[in-house]
Length: 319
Image 1: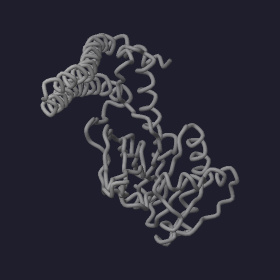
Image 2 (image 1 turned 180 degrees about the horizontal axis):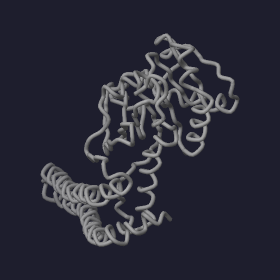
Image 3 (image 1 turned 60 degrees about the vertical axis):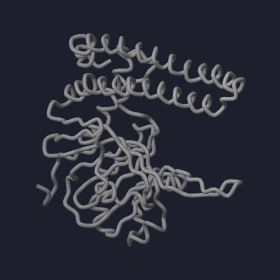
Protein backbone atom coordinates (compact mmCIF):
# COMPACT_ATOMS: atom_id res chain seq x y z
CA UNK A 1 0.00 0.00 0.00
CA UNK A 2 1.26 3.46 -0.93
CA UNK A 3 2.31 5.26 2.29
CA UNK A 4 1.12 8.59 0.88
CA UNK A 5 -2.35 7.12 0.33
CA UNK A 6 -2.43 5.60 3.83
CA UNK A 7 -1.64 8.98 5.42
CA UNK A 8 -4.25 10.70 3.24
CA UNK A 9 -6.82 8.09 4.20
CA UNK A 10 -6.20 8.32 7.94
CA UNK A 11 -5.91 12.11 8.18
CA UNK A 12 -8.34 13.46 5.58
CA UNK A 13 -10.60 10.79 4.11
CA UNK A 14 -11.63 8.48 6.93
CA UNK A 15 -13.89 10.92 8.85
CA UNK A 16 -15.76 11.85 5.66
CA UNK A 17 -15.92 8.23 4.54
CA UNK A 18 -17.50 7.19 7.83
CA UNK A 19 -20.19 9.85 7.38
CA UNK A 20 -20.70 8.75 3.78
CA UNK A 21 -21.04 5.14 4.88
CA UNK A 22 -23.90 6.21 7.14
CA UNK A 23 -25.55 7.78 4.08
CA UNK A 24 -24.87 4.62 2.07
CA UNK A 25 -26.70 2.49 4.64
CA UNK A 26 -29.70 4.81 4.41
CA UNK A 27 -29.67 4.41 0.64
CA UNK A 28 -29.67 0.63 1.10
CA UNK A 29 -32.72 0.93 3.36
CA UNK A 30 -34.45 2.99 0.68
CA UNK A 31 -33.45 0.38 -1.91
CA UNK A 32 -35.04 -2.48 0.01
CA UNK A 33 -38.11 -0.38 0.84
CA UNK A 34 -38.57 0.55 -2.81
CA UNK A 35 -38.10 -3.05 -3.88
CA UNK A 36 -40.50 -4.35 -1.24
CA UNK A 37 -43.22 -1.81 -1.99
CA UNK A 38 -42.64 -2.05 -5.74
CA UNK A 39 -43.28 -5.80 -5.63
CA UNK A 40 -45.56 -6.16 -2.61
CA UNK A 41 -47.99 -3.36 -3.39
CA UNK A 42 -48.98 -4.63 -6.86
CA UNK A 43 -49.09 -8.20 -5.54
CA UNK A 44 -51.72 -7.08 -3.01
CA UNK A 45 -53.64 -4.37 -4.87
CA UNK A 46 -54.02 -6.01 -8.29
CA UNK A 47 -55.79 -9.17 -7.00
CA UNK A 48 -58.10 -6.96 -4.88
CA UNK A 49 -58.86 -4.74 -7.88
CA UNK A 50 -60.03 -7.81 -9.80
CA UNK A 51 -62.36 -8.71 -6.94
CA UNK A 52 -64.06 -5.29 -7.14
CA UNK A 53 -63.92 -4.99 -10.94
CA UNK A 54 -61.33 -2.20 -10.77
CA UNK A 55 -58.62 -3.93 -12.74
CA UNK A 56 -57.48 -0.89 -14.76
CA UNK A 57 -57.30 1.31 -11.66
CA UNK A 58 -55.37 -1.33 -9.70
CA UNK A 59 -52.81 -1.89 -12.45
CA UNK A 60 -52.27 1.82 -13.19
CA UNK A 61 -52.06 2.77 -9.51
CA UNK A 62 -49.58 -0.05 -8.84
CA UNK A 63 -47.37 1.11 -11.72
CA UNK A 64 -47.44 4.69 -10.39
CA UNK A 65 -46.46 3.56 -6.89
CA UNK A 66 -43.61 1.41 -8.26
CA UNK A 67 -42.30 4.34 -10.35
CA UNK A 68 -42.46 6.76 -7.40
CA UNK A 69 -40.61 4.35 -5.10
CA UNK A 70 -37.93 3.72 -7.71
CA UNK A 71 -37.43 7.45 -8.23
CA UNK A 72 -37.11 8.05 -4.49
CA UNK A 73 -34.36 5.43 -4.33
CA UNK A 74 -32.64 6.70 -7.49
CA UNK A 75 -32.61 10.26 -6.17
CA UNK A 76 -30.91 9.25 -2.93
CA UNK A 77 -28.44 6.97 -4.71
CA UNK A 78 -27.52 9.68 -7.22
CA UNK A 79 -26.97 12.17 -4.39
CA UNK A 80 -24.73 9.69 -2.58
CA UNK A 81 -22.60 9.17 -5.70
CA UNK A 82 -22.39 12.94 -6.21
CA UNK A 83 -21.26 13.49 -2.60
CA UNK A 84 -18.74 10.65 -2.81
CA UNK A 85 -17.11 12.03 -5.93
CA UNK A 86 -17.09 15.60 -4.61
CA UNK A 87 -15.65 14.70 -1.21
CA UNK A 88 -13.44 11.70 -1.96
CA UNK A 89 -12.47 11.39 -5.63
CA UNK A 90 -11.62 15.11 -5.80
CA UNK A 91 -9.20 14.69 -2.88
CA UNK A 92 -7.63 11.60 -4.42
CA UNK A 93 -6.97 13.50 -7.65
CA UNK A 94 -5.54 16.49 -5.74
CA UNK A 95 -3.22 14.19 -3.81
CA UNK A 96 -1.69 13.05 -7.12
CA UNK A 97 -1.54 16.56 -8.63
CA UNK A 98 -3.24 19.56 -7.01
CA UNK A 99 -3.40 21.46 -10.33
CA UNK A 100 -5.79 18.96 -11.92
CA UNK A 101 -9.46 19.82 -12.41
CA UNK A 102 -12.27 17.29 -12.03
CA UNK A 103 -15.77 17.56 -13.51
CA UNK A 104 -17.77 14.42 -12.59
CA UNK A 105 -20.64 15.08 -15.01
CA UNK A 106 -18.53 16.10 -18.04
CA UNK A 107 -16.62 14.04 -20.60
CA UNK A 108 -14.27 14.26 -23.57
CA UNK A 109 -15.67 16.55 -26.28
CA UNK A 110 -17.32 14.90 -29.29
CA UNK A 111 -14.95 16.68 -31.66
CA UNK A 112 -11.92 15.28 -29.83
CA UNK A 113 -13.40 11.81 -30.19
CA UNK A 114 -13.83 12.32 -33.94
CA UNK A 115 -10.38 13.87 -34.32
CA UNK A 116 -8.77 10.71 -32.95
CA UNK A 117 -9.63 8.82 -36.16
CA UNK A 118 -9.86 5.63 -34.11
CA UNK A 119 -13.52 4.93 -34.74
CA UNK A 120 -14.79 4.44 -38.26
CA UNK A 121 -18.44 3.93 -37.37
CA UNK A 122 -20.72 6.93 -36.76
CA UNK A 123 -22.23 6.96 -33.27
CA UNK A 124 -25.93 7.50 -32.49
CA UNK A 125 -25.49 7.88 -28.74
CA UNK A 126 -22.59 9.56 -26.94
CA UNK A 127 -22.25 9.50 -23.17
CA UNK A 128 -19.49 9.95 -20.62
CA UNK A 129 -18.49 11.23 -17.21
CA UNK A 130 -15.56 11.96 -14.89
CA UNK A 131 -13.56 14.43 -16.97
CA UNK A 132 -10.10 15.00 -15.49
CA UNK A 133 -7.79 17.63 -16.96
CA UNK A 134 -4.40 19.06 -16.10
CA UNK A 135 -0.81 19.64 -17.06
CA UNK A 136 2.30 17.68 -16.13
CA UNK A 137 5.35 19.80 -16.86
CA UNK A 138 5.00 20.63 -20.59
CA UNK A 139 2.25 18.14 -21.38
CA UNK A 140 -1.44 19.00 -21.24
CA UNK A 141 -3.73 16.00 -20.82
CA UNK A 142 -7.36 15.16 -20.29
CA UNK A 143 -9.32 11.95 -20.00
CA UNK A 144 -12.75 10.64 -19.08
CA UNK A 145 -14.99 7.63 -19.21
CA UNK A 146 -16.76 7.36 -22.54
CA UNK A 147 -19.45 5.15 -24.05
CA UNK A 148 -20.46 5.46 -27.71
CA UNK A 149 -23.09 3.34 -29.44
CA UNK A 150 -24.79 2.92 -32.79
CA UNK A 151 -28.41 1.91 -33.35
CA UNK A 152 -29.97 -0.70 -35.57
CA UNK A 153 -33.62 -1.59 -36.03
CA UNK A 154 -35.34 -4.91 -36.40
CA UNK A 155 -38.94 -6.08 -36.50
CA UNK A 156 -40.46 -8.27 -33.84
CA UNK A 157 -43.00 -11.02 -34.50
CA UNK A 158 -45.85 -8.50 -34.50
CA UNK A 159 -44.15 -6.34 -37.12
CA UNK A 160 -43.18 -3.51 -34.77
CA UNK A 161 -39.78 -1.84 -35.08
CA UNK A 162 -37.38 -2.46 -32.22
CA UNK A 163 -34.27 -0.40 -31.52
CA UNK A 164 -31.09 -2.27 -30.70
CA UNK A 165 -28.02 -0.53 -29.32
CA UNK A 166 -24.46 -1.72 -29.99
CA UNK A 167 -21.32 -0.50 -28.29
CA UNK A 168 -18.64 1.12 -30.44
CA UNK A 169 -16.39 2.06 -27.56
CA UNK A 170 -16.67 1.87 -23.79
CA UNK A 171 -13.80 2.70 -21.50
CA UNK A 172 -11.30 5.45 -20.77
CA UNK A 173 -10.43 7.94 -23.48
CA UNK A 174 -7.17 9.85 -23.03
CA UNK A 175 -5.73 12.83 -24.95
CA UNK A 176 -2.31 14.44 -24.51
CA UNK A 177 0.05 16.74 -26.36
CA UNK A 178 2.51 14.63 -28.32
CA UNK A 179 6.21 15.28 -27.81
CA UNK A 180 6.92 15.48 -31.53
CA UNK A 181 5.54 17.69 -34.28
CA UNK A 182 3.76 15.83 -37.10
CA UNK A 183 1.17 16.53 -39.76
CA UNK A 184 0.07 13.03 -40.81
CA UNK A 185 -2.21 10.47 -39.23
CA UNK A 186 -0.98 7.24 -37.66
CA UNK A 187 -3.19 4.71 -35.87
CA UNK A 188 -2.07 1.76 -33.78
CA UNK A 189 -4.77 -0.87 -33.44
CA UNK A 190 -4.82 -4.05 -31.32
CA UNK A 191 -3.62 -6.98 -33.40
CA UNK A 192 -6.86 -8.87 -33.00
CA UNK A 193 -9.61 -8.76 -35.64
CA UNK A 194 -12.37 -9.25 -33.07
CA UNK A 195 -11.21 -6.10 -31.30
CA UNK A 196 -11.36 -4.09 -34.54
CA UNK A 197 -15.13 -4.39 -34.52
CA UNK A 198 -15.30 -3.74 -30.78
CA UNK A 199 -13.40 -0.49 -31.27
CA UNK A 200 -15.71 0.50 -34.12
CA UNK A 201 -12.88 0.40 -36.62
CA UNK A 202 -12.56 -1.70 -39.77
CA UNK A 203 -9.69 -2.25 -42.13
CA UNK A 204 -11.79 -0.77 -44.96
CA UNK A 205 -12.23 2.42 -42.91
CA UNK A 206 -8.49 2.73 -42.45
CA UNK A 207 -7.72 2.30 -46.13
CA UNK A 208 -10.50 4.77 -47.01
CA UNK A 209 -8.54 7.35 -44.99
CA UNK A 210 -5.52 6.66 -47.23
CA UNK A 211 -3.72 4.82 -44.47
CA UNK A 212 -1.48 1.92 -45.34
CA UNK A 213 -0.05 -0.84 -43.23
CA UNK A 214 3.31 0.07 -41.70
CA UNK A 215 5.72 -2.85 -41.27
CA UNK A 216 7.97 -2.39 -38.24
CA UNK A 217 10.97 -4.52 -37.41
CA UNK A 218 9.93 -5.42 -33.89
CA UNK A 219 8.34 -8.88 -33.61
CA UNK A 220 7.05 -8.33 -30.05
CA UNK A 221 5.30 -5.09 -31.02
CA UNK A 222 3.89 -6.67 -34.19
CA UNK A 223 2.29 -9.43 -32.12
CA UNK A 224 0.39 -6.80 -30.14
CA UNK A 225 -0.47 -4.15 -32.72
CA UNK A 226 -1.06 -3.29 -36.36
CA UNK A 227 0.11 0.17 -37.44
CA UNK A 228 -1.49 2.19 -40.24
CA UNK A 229 -0.46 5.61 -41.51
CA UNK A 230 -0.87 8.01 -44.40
CA UNK A 231 2.84 8.86 -44.08
CA UNK A 232 5.20 5.89 -43.79
CA UNK A 233 8.25 8.06 -43.04
CA UNK A 234 6.47 10.03 -40.33
CA UNK A 235 5.10 6.85 -38.74
CA UNK A 236 8.63 5.52 -38.30
CA UNK A 237 9.72 8.88 -36.94
CA UNK A 238 6.94 8.74 -34.34
CA UNK A 239 7.47 5.08 -33.52
CA UNK A 240 11.12 5.14 -32.58
CA UNK A 241 12.56 2.00 -30.94
CA UNK A 242 12.24 3.73 -27.56
CA UNK A 243 8.57 4.64 -28.12
CA UNK A 244 7.79 1.14 -29.38
CA UNK A 245 9.22 -0.35 -26.18
CA UNK A 246 7.22 2.10 -24.06
CA UNK A 247 4.00 1.15 -25.87
CA UNK A 248 4.78 -2.54 -25.34
CA UNK A 249 5.40 -1.98 -21.63
CA UNK A 250 2.26 0.12 -21.25
CA UNK A 251 0.14 -2.48 -23.05
CA UNK A 252 1.54 -5.28 -20.90
CA UNK A 253 0.63 -3.37 -17.72
CA UNK A 254 -2.95 -2.93 -18.84
CA UNK A 255 -5.56 -5.65 -18.60
CA UNK A 256 -7.56 -4.19 -21.48
CA UNK A 257 -7.40 -3.73 -25.24
CA UNK A 258 -5.74 -0.42 -26.15
CA UNK A 259 -5.63 1.59 -29.36
CA UNK A 260 -3.49 4.68 -30.05
CA UNK A 261 -3.45 7.39 -32.68
CA UNK A 262 -1.17 10.30 -33.51
CA UNK A 263 -3.20 13.09 -35.11
CA UNK A 264 -2.58 16.86 -35.30
CA UNK A 265 0.22 16.92 -32.72
CA UNK A 266 -1.88 14.94 -30.23
CA UNK A 267 -1.71 11.43 -28.87
CA UNK A 268 -5.07 9.70 -28.40
CA UNK A 269 -5.43 6.54 -26.34
CA UNK A 270 -8.61 4.45 -26.11
CA UNK A 271 -8.57 1.91 -23.27
CA UNK A 272 -11.48 -0.46 -23.80
CA UNK A 273 -13.10 -1.51 -20.52
CA UNK A 274 -16.54 -2.25 -19.10
CA UNK A 275 -15.43 -1.05 -15.66
CA UNK A 276 -17.20 1.94 -14.11
CA UNK A 277 -14.21 3.93 -12.85
CA UNK A 278 -14.20 6.32 -9.87
CA UNK A 279 -17.68 5.17 -8.82
CA UNK A 280 -18.81 4.07 -5.33
CA UNK A 281 -20.71 0.82 -4.93
CA UNK A 282 -23.94 0.45 -3.02
CA UNK A 283 -23.02 -2.78 -1.26
CA UNK A 284 -19.36 -1.85 -0.66
CA UNK A 285 -18.39 -0.09 2.58
CA UNK A 286 -17.55 3.53 1.81
CA UNK A 287 -14.67 3.54 4.30
CA UNK A 288 -12.95 0.50 2.80
CA UNK A 289 -9.27 1.39 2.33
CA UNK A 290 -8.90 -1.35 -0.30
CA UNK A 291 -11.68 0.19 -2.41
CA UNK A 292 -10.21 3.69 -2.05
CA UNK A 293 -6.84 2.27 -3.11
CA UNK A 294 -8.37 0.75 -6.26
CA UNK A 295 -9.67 4.18 -7.34
CA UNK A 296 -6.35 5.83 -6.44
CA UNK A 297 -4.32 3.33 -8.49
CA UNK A 298 -6.69 3.64 -11.47
CA UNK A 299 -6.10 7.40 -11.40
CA UNK A 300 -2.36 6.94 -11.12
CA UNK A 301 -2.31 4.47 -14.00
CA UNK A 302 -3.88 6.96 -16.42
CA UNK A 303 -2.10 10.11 -15.21
CA UNK A 304 1.25 8.30 -15.30
CA UNK A 305 0.85 7.75 -19.07
CA UNK A 306 2.74 11.03 -19.52
CA UNK A 307 5.79 9.60 -17.76
CA UNK A 308 5.31 6.07 -19.12
CA UNK A 309 5.50 7.34 -22.70
CA UNK A 310 8.03 10.09 -21.91
CA UNK A 311 5.78 12.79 -23.37
CA UNK A 312 7.61 15.62 -21.60
CA UNK A 313 10.79 15.04 -23.61
CA UNK A 314 10.33 17.52 -26.45
CA UNK A 315 12.01 16.46 -29.70
CA UNK A 316 13.18 18.58 -32.62
CA UNK A 317 10.57 21.23 -33.52
CA UNK A 318 8.07 20.52 -30.75
CA UNK A 319 8.23 23.45 -28.24
